[in-house]
Each structure stands twice: as structure tokens, then as C-alpha cells.
Image (tube, rainbow over all chains, first blue to last red; front, side, top):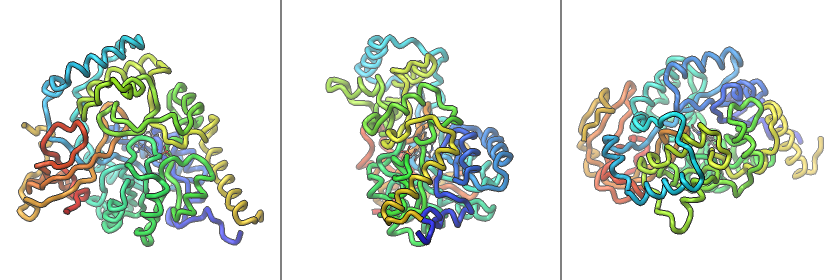
Length: 366
Length: 87
Ligand SMILES: Cc1cc2nc3c(=O)[nH]c(=O)nc-3n(C[C@H](O)[C@H](O)[C@H](O)COP(=O)(O)O)c2cc1C
């Protein structure tokens, strides 16, 4: 092979070796992937500005001048504010009874800590704005908006030397963000863990590539192996954005029960459901999802009612570390996560498998 | 409905946007989890807006909702300006 197929325009832009991007909530995974020659982004949506500032400093100490990113889930819609008691009163008795039936059937204890329902409504534009301001102040090398458009912040970020990436689920969002000067577009398909849109990875990636011009497009959703990486590059992507892949890495701070669930998981282990929050999201199957998908189950409520209903279950499952109850976001590529490897090894294995795939295709083993 | 959550926002009215038919590729973080979700809306922009911070992050109020996620009870939604598509 004359050209290294893994040395993409994204690698050129970032000065990195491999076009592998890790999304994680764990700082140790970020530093391991970046130091292995990949790129990594820390999810900070649930953290205060102070924690975000401290995390950026911590990562800088571990990776030196190498680039890394910080991700926020910028909202793009927000319901008018409402009173919590009004909301609780809005949950129909039939749904309360159904949740109580699940609790009884699975002998779910009460959560150890009371669920702070008052945090509902706490995540809003003002909090996101304060989180964003600290990223600008700290001049993190890259800011990633994991959901809403980062267009309004592109100029301010660029003035501070910060690159801006936008994660999209639709081509028209990509078009808008590219026009606003976003540096990299991550096209996320239906196979993805968590807040995936309705379009499959194999369809959205080339469609976004077709309109992106020189802006690098990164493929996301169900990508967990070197063969996926090779396929993404063939679709025109300049790299892959991966979440599930790192959950069972040695460095990951995920609960061991979740790690073991992931090692046992396959493409059919997840559901795309509204039963947790009232919003559709891809999560692992568990007692809660099983019961809500019964034909005689009530229809899940909208947001935030369904979340108010499931909050006790989620808290109890985690507090008591009940394997049958716990849930996490996994993508459909889960089958290829089969051992608990160091993150560095995951990067190298992916690179090796992708290169071998290209060699198989070209009949070239040089 | 009191919107005490947004005490620092600068509010205003944009007559150019008022009455426009629009779609919004929306969504947001799911409180109580570390996850998020996408949501789609369509309706009419009232023209009311809120700006957060500097540079301003602008949000418009969408009313008369014709499309909203199943179970979304409210009859209006705030939409981030860059996620709005006029139709
Ligand atoms: C446990 C978990 C939590 C996630 N939380 C976020 C988040 O806070 N912000 C975000 O932008 N994406 C989040 N994602 C989605 C990832 O950014 C990414 O799009 C997704 O994992 C890609 O699909 P894959 O898991 O199949 O690789 C999360 C993914 C996982 C697995």
C-alpha cells in the first residue's frame, strides 16, 4: 500500500497518529487514548464549571501538548419551566401502579439515597452556558457539542484557539454547522449508544460526507472494531467516534457489573426506548425495559414524567448494584467488546485490524 | 408560568420571526442520567426570544405545536436558534 489509509485529514488537522476518537466520562481513558496516538473527549455534561476546570488541568498534566476535547450536551429545546409538585401530580395513577408492580415483582429495595427530584429543570441553558464559559476560559483544545448546535460559540472559540466539533444526527444539522464554521462534524447513526437519531450509521455518514466539502466527517454509532474503522474510512469518514468501546477498558471507572454486561452483550442486547426518560434513547435491556415493553404495559409517559417515574428504580438499581436491574447506554456494536483491555491496547488492536482489512481488500501485505 | 430558571436571560421580541412556520431538531440532557435524547418539534415561532450570555445564545419560543414527541404535554417549547429550520 503506498498511502497509509489511516492517516486521514483529521490526523493531519489534529497532529495525531490514528483517526480514533474516544468519547468517555473517565479522565484516565482520555489520557490513555491520547497518549496512545488517538484523540479523546471527556463528557462533562453533568459536572459543575469548577469540576470541568479541574479536569482540563488534570488532563493537560497527563498529556502535555497533545490535543484532547471536552464534551457538553448543549440542549436545543427546553420546555417552559414548571413546578415539581405540579409535575408529580401529572403522573397518572395507572403508571404509578405499574411502577409499583415492577418494584414488587423484582423485590426492588428503596434507594439508599433519596432521589433528588428537584434537580429536574436544573439542567438548562444557564447551566450549559456556565459550563461552556469555563471551557472557553480554560482554552480546552477542542469543544464538542454532543447534541445542540455550537454555531453561536464558534467565533469566540476560534479566537481562543479552540476547535469546535459538532455531533449531528441529521444531514441538515451538519450543513448548518459547517456553514457556521464548525471544524469537524461527527455524524452519529442509529446504532449508537444513548441519544441516537433515527438514521442508520451506514446512511448518515456518506450523506454528510457528500455535503461536507473539506470539513472532516467522523463516523459514529456501533463502531467497535478495526473492520468498522476501515468501513467508516471507505464511506468517506476521516475517523471514528466511539463510546461503548471504552466502557469495559481497564481504565474505565464504569461499575464492574456494567463491564461484565458489556462483555456478554451482542447486537440485540439494547433497546431504543422512551421508557426511561420519555425521550427515545438506546440502553441495555433490563427489568425496567422488559416490563415496559409488555403488550399490557401502559404507554410510557413523556418527559419529564417518565423520568420522575423511573428515577427511584435507577437509583435503587445503582445503590444496591443489582445486576438484573442496572442499565447503561450501549451501542449495537457491543458484540466486539470481548475483553477488558487497557485503552492503549484497544487503540492498537483497532489500528492493526483496520490495516489488515485494507490489506485483505487490496491483496497487499506490504 | 414563572420561568425563574432563566433569571439571567435577556428577553426580547423579534417581529421578523413572529408567525414563521418552523421545525426544530431539538433535544437535551436527560436529568438524573448522564444521557441525552433527541426530540423533534414543529410549530409557529411567537417572536419572543431569550439571549443567554455573551456571545448571545439565542432561543425562540415555538407555539401552536403541530409535531411534538409523544407524551410532551406542554403547548410551547423554547428552541435554540441554530436548530430551527424555517419551512
Ligand atoms: C455510557 C455512555 C454515555 C454517553 N454520554 C454522552 C454524553 O454525555 N455526551 C455525548 O455527547 N454523548 C454521550 N454518549 C454518546 C457518545 O458520544 C457516542 O455518540 C456514542 O457512544 C457512539 O455510539 P457507540 O457507543 O456505539 O460507539 C454516551 C455514550 C455512552 C456509551
